[in-house]
Length: 351
Image (tube, rainbow, N blue to C red; front, side, top):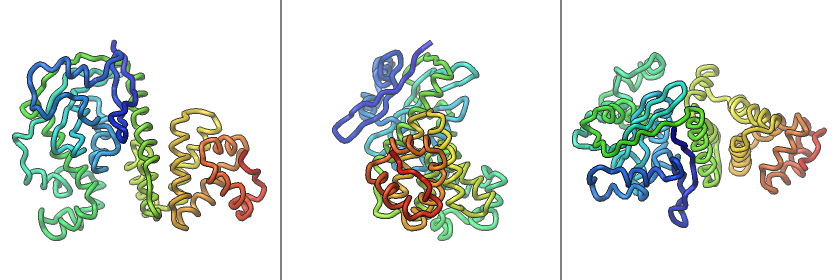
């Protein structure tokens, strides 16, 4: 049985990555040592590459693709990509992963070859790939973009407005099937790693939460509108796309007060009440503060009326929340919000 853990590695003064350590040794070093033959010179050493699980890939469609694969029991999983492109068009190192109830196995590592890449096939594998449509897809796209010809004006317009969705579909329908064919992978190292399933899934959650916090710390906008706020909340959880789709199915549109209550204030209240999962508490608290700091009037109203009112229902929760926000936000709550919001006139200032 092998032990897997995460550590943050400072690549340079502006670049910090999470890296997998297996039995105390970096995965990239394991690959460098076990490489059974020469690879293209731009591929090695592997520690010069970027971990593919980062949420700072060039496109969110690619991020969604990687984390979609995390949910599969058997997968060819990208682990490193080219740091210059930060997508799946150049260097991609993959690992063959198999999971069962108790264990997770990393069997071999490979380099993705693009000898058989066909641009036209890829173009047809996005929104135009009707054979991959679900019932929901037909309901949503069946009477509009589904029947548009590839490269037609309406097709080009749709993908320009929905690129992340288009790219995710191409990855699922074209890129991943490419990985599943052995002739497209140059398998260069046998790994034979086995991990405890519970420990492994804990590591995966830690990776997601750590990357989420990094992205939130780097978040910067002059103003956050309603749509941008929804996108921010959607990216909190690994199943954020599915949750948002269910919300849309239930209400026909995004009702931000209800969406924020379900996805932020209610779960944060329970975490603070039970004093558990500090990483998630930091994520929720950071999202709330970003909504307050950058949000337009409608977004700030959600913070004031829905989120903060909920958290103030319990004095212990309220004061614990204060430990995770900046002094500027705390001062706004104590000096402005409590005095101006009639529904919170009985609330004590955050300590």
